[in-house]
Image 1 (cartoon, helix red, strand yellow):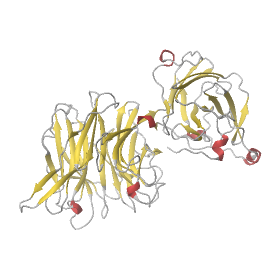
Image 2 (cartoon, rainbow, N blue to C red):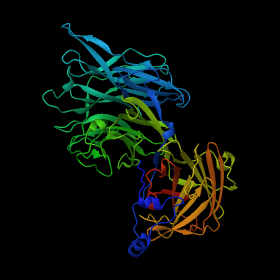
Image 3 (spheres, rainbow, N blue to C red):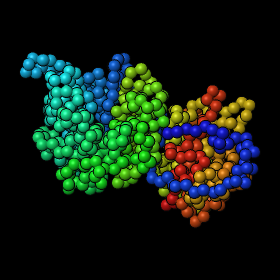
Image 4 (cartoon, rainbow, N blue to C red):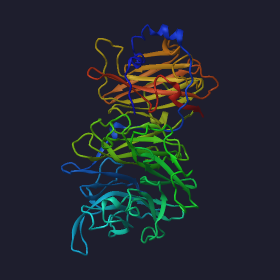
Length: 584
């Protein structure tokens, strides 16, 4: 998420003293422009949800990372990761509030070959999957410390009792005994007919070159035995398809790979039908290989290590690590997440779950479903320490809104009995101050409730018009404009209950009389609540037609000055970026 504080956004501040005299020039030269509407779900990351999973407090580790988090059928959250050459697991029984002590999954071990030569074999690339029958399988990559002694390999373990006990390591694939010709990054997929597949990056066939393909092995008995014959999923000659993660979308298998077609790696999607099931590999110019991002990145920008998941509403979500907007050093990449369509194409609406300084990193990440409204991003990051650690953050899935009819008493008291339990709007990526909101309609009025967690509500002692509050932006006619104009409205209400009302005019905001807008607030030590009643006629919504809405959470302090955080992927200026709303 990007936060902009500029001269223009200062003009948009909740209780600004008014825009500069530039408004006159804007009015003379203003040309009303329509933008491409931002549609579909969005992901709003919750700063307050961040947790460090490894190393746990009081324990030192040189490196911990490559995390994968799964929610099991009994509600248990299980996370696996690598730490100082071993694989580990932690569990949570209380929706991630607390986590168990770590359990070693795969152990670093010694290997002696037939010549009596010894090397230590490290564990990397931990992966976890729950099967249709409830069994758990996990995989890892064996990485020998010395070349020409032990093979690089893919190993798995199984559990039939929800992780209480595990089978011994089963090596299902061996590559060459050297780093240049190894195998890497296993990931699981189970098909509708229960065939279990393991995808991995494979250099073993290319001992005379630096090429790499994506290979796949399968099991027809829930991982007890595995095919010996590899299937080649994808291959680009003279290049290195890598880091596969597979997902079923309708009748297709999608695999996200990093592909260094030109210069740096970029995320691509290769695909096969379920019936074809990789009968032939996806080569360089195949129609089954597609660039993932809707807006291509420059060739010099790195974007590798992709991961895939699917939202309950059907959209496919992609994560990767990237240098975009950072240095050219891929080691200092950060995690980025993009939302695709329901076919797993056209990924856009980019966000960055963790605020990572340019001198730090967030890599080897993953995303997965936490519950029906929430995803979790897991990262290997040193953003708050000198060594890499495992951190997670949850993201709220914000849908396009369909507002229900309900009679609301506008009194500042927001209750579940009146508003229900679902508050689909969330803002709170920048710090622990956050907002949840909901919308209703009844008769000829629009009702909005907003609950703000803010333990330090404040205002400027000299200028009382600068204060914590919320801006509500409404594009009454679904006009999708690039700048505010007639039919675009802003309503500002602070925690003290003071309210103002603006309508767009030639690219800027013009204050209007409040007329019949009613606002009620209630504050306590944890923050404040706001209820608004807005006559549809005041914001020119006719026949309860579709419109767009945006919220701006305004946080003020004497040290930070102020900022306004909008709904994710929204810009306070451009209504085409705001959330689509329809009446039920």
